[in-house]
Length: 477
Image (cartoon, rainbow, N blue to C red):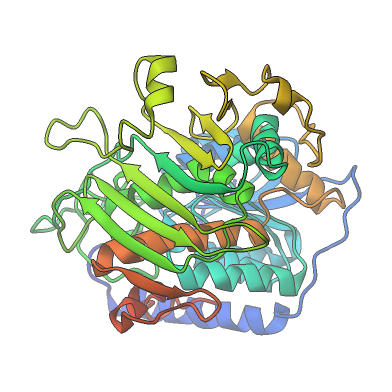
């Protein structure tokens, strides 16, 4: 293992650090100019995929473990201590604090990049890698903003790289089966969708604390901030894990979980761009973090012969005694409550003209069906009409459960195999629509949405939430 040594980065930047950072940003721009037209290296099924991992702790650790069949060439993490387990697992991997330096120096030694950072870094890392001709696996949500999702979608298509987002439910046969059942018309055209989550399980509904704390050794706070505005380090407030609820770093409960729970209904109902998005209900709002609870309504216009569809999102943690979590109305979920005595903490319900389909988990991998002339919900594996519907979507035949199979499907795609099911063409589309809910929440008013032009026609003030400002030296590639 090779360890790079850097000046300690705290809440303020010395002249030496500033000059180093500026030089590195310039080097990154130079690398992109050299490799901007790069194409992926052709790989055979027996080749090892050479991977650079951005993020070695937390989800990054499990992502690296899921790719243990391949070669982890290098690992970058602003917090070396969090990457310790991954570095032990991959003793030959080089370590870097700064992912920009890693990509510059390892460009010729890698085929692919995994992005397992906080949300605010996803797009800047992924776009840089794609422009260098590298395949990309990126954790969900794919990006932090609507514009970034559209940007990655177009960029991946242009450069011909193999991509996959880390919403591992996509690899489950049950999710793909649910999509087949709905699209075969068993429950009729979908008119309403209700999706709910037990998130947040991290702090939200709080404001920025005063003061600053010493930055721990071997943690580069300025690198962790990346494109986000500068702010003082506070121990345990943002890093690790708690960044999810902060506007500058995360996407709240909606961004974190809807890439899982809304994935199946988004695909099944062919939702496309909404025409309207509005914040219906919420707990107390503040200028720094997402609220503890929210209810958001999306309206999707008629498309591909399907009728207008309403989509409702609800969140809130049932263990939070300070608020009541928001959930679908009892009359809408009557059949679910009769079957299970109570509504599960997370799930989704699709209501069609001829029946309903309910999934009681985050991934949509297990589902129940009830047609209009039936008395109760029946497991989709046992429902006679559902069983008769032919398979139309290829299955992920790789071993394991959702997480390693999601990675293995991507790895196989990088070696000439089938296109991954959650490639950026679909994953960025899903992310873009989900993040519109975050925009509506922050604007606080109904948005009339022009999807193709990425514009809230009645709310010009939404523009700076749709496309963010980047700190100098951290611009989107």
